[in-house]
Length: 143
Image 1 (cartoon, rainbow, N blue to C red):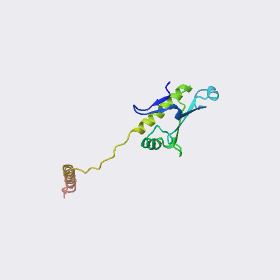
Image 2: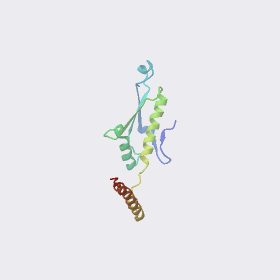
Image 3: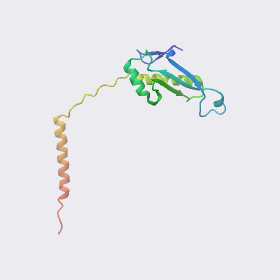
Image 4: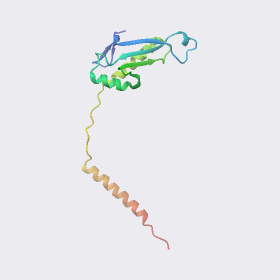
């Protein structure tokens, strides 16, 4: 196993920045669940990580939402599997996916105006629709 988590081709995080604790898991597993600590609690201090740029750090903490503390520490709990190695791998994968998502910078929206042709098409459609509705009111009386 390497000593770094590869996020993108240009970004990797050393495992020393990630703290992994094994805790007892809930859910299926019978008596084994009461004896063995298979769930993984991952802690990553995003606010103090020198590996992340300022923009990525801000987006990551915002993206983590309730999984991030006020101090910028991201806490992920992985207990999908019944073994420590699988839960450990799951937690690290989820962290790398979260960081990978945070590396994408959303492009600024450039406001545009509707074209003259599209305005005309819209008005023509409205006029036609209004004419159809106007014909409904002029029904001949049979008196």
